Image (cartoon, rainbow, N blue to C red; front, side, top):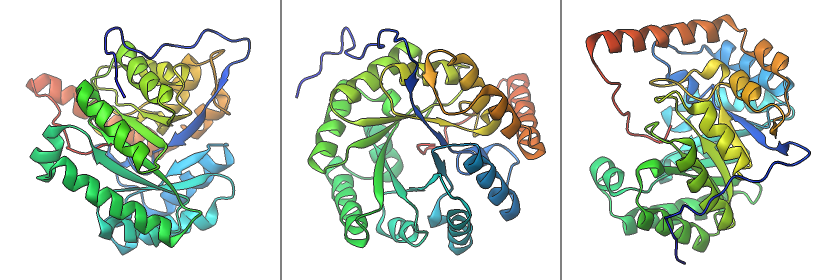
Length: 308
């Protein structure tokens, strides 16, 4: 497989009479909870999950089971309470993480695959061959446990990856029969043109693409809209755009900018009603203040070193 990186192969689809239908993945309960000073109570997590489910959100990313038994129990409670949304969990490529994820009975287990040498060696101290052995073991573990459990793989740090690393990731995932990938702007540096190219490449290679943005450059909604127009089937959002550092793509803001271009299953008024939660408002205020203080001190938010 070869990849021509200039010009980038992905192209935005031509406007159609009907908006493109894309599914929403809400990650308020996982990435959103990483907003500074925010920790949802079990009751709040459950009420938010039920509200999102009633609102028609396709998938809820509910947490990281490897955090311990209490986290597993919270996710199982959400799984039992919702009636329509798919429940997903976030997992490192570790046997113990996958076993914890399986105990939650989640519909989808999301495995985080670092694709740059910086993350492989600097963060994990692993080689590419080593992480692929671990990924293969985790996939076998999931598939042996349940044929119903779906798998997606997140391409951590893909926004800083070179052409060879991008092609390498696509080739190995195809060999391992993984066909849903998350293009993750881990450090929030993508622009719409670069987003279009990355998403377009994986779409053209036959993958179902999910896109996950961060708002470090104020482009989370623009990048997410571009990803949907480039062929991504799943778009990640949080209520009010809450999340680590500068936050994530906001649900209501995405619906507003996508009008007439993407069909997301919710109206703007429905999204705004979901975001009216006092908990969400408080979280948004907390990290806006953190960002202001960071600018005053001349600081730059540090990379947390995970896919997000």
